[in-house]
Image (tube, rainbow, N blue to C red):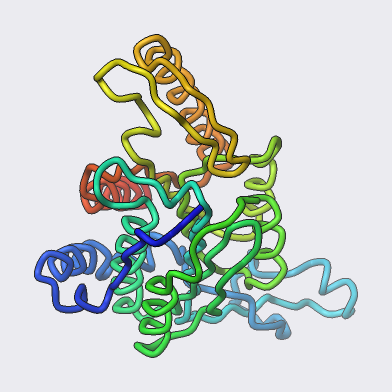
Length: 298
C-alpha cells in the first residue's frame, strides 16, 4: 500500500498548545497515582536472610528453609524503575482514513502524549513498531534521550506499511521484554489470526497489558449515501464492488460483533482495554480509563 500520504511530524507538537494541554492533563491524573495504578506495592524479591525473633512469620519461605536447614525469610526491596513499552501496529490497515487523519497518525500522536506523561513519572519508556515483523525497537530506558528517539521513529515514514501478524510479534516481545513491565498494545486489531486471543493469556502471566484499539469511522459503518463502492482488502489486495445500502446493516452488525469479541478477550484475560475513534479526541477515553482503574484500586 502506498504511504505517500503519511504525514507524521511530531516536532511541531512539542510546542503545540493543544498537545501540551493534553500532556498536562495526563500528567495531572498520573501524578502521585502511577505507583498505585501499575506498580502495586512497588516491591521485588531481593534475597533471603536468617529468621530472627520478631520477624513477620508470613515472610518465611518454608521451601527454602527446608533446603537450607534453617529458617529463612524473604527480603523485599522497593524498586523505583518501571518499564512502559508501547507496541504500535504500523501495518497497511493503519494507513487508512475517511476523516483526514490516518489511523497511524492518530496513534502516533496519542503514543507521543502518553510517552511524555510516563517519562514525567520517572519510569522507563520503550517502543516497538510492528507489521508482520518488528520494524523498529527501542528498549525501555529513562530520560529525554529515549523520548526523542521514540519521536524520530514514530515520524519516520519508512517504518509504516506492510503485512500484519499479531501472534508472531507477541512471541518476539515476550522473548526480550523483561517482566515488571506495562505494555500498551496500539492497533486497529484488523486481520487478527485465528486463536490470537490465547496469546493474551501468555502476556497476562508476565505483564500488565492495556490494549488501545484505534479505528476509523469506516471500520464501524459504511457511508450514509448509497451507491456502489470499490473496497480492497489491505493485506490480500483483493478488490470487490459492493452496494453500500444493501450491505450497510450487515457490515455494522459484523463489526460490532468483532469489536466486542476483541474487548471481551482483553477483559477475560483481566487486561485493560480502551476503544478510540479517529473522529474523536483520544484524551477523554484514556482519562476515563485511568480514573476508573484508580477508583478500583483505592
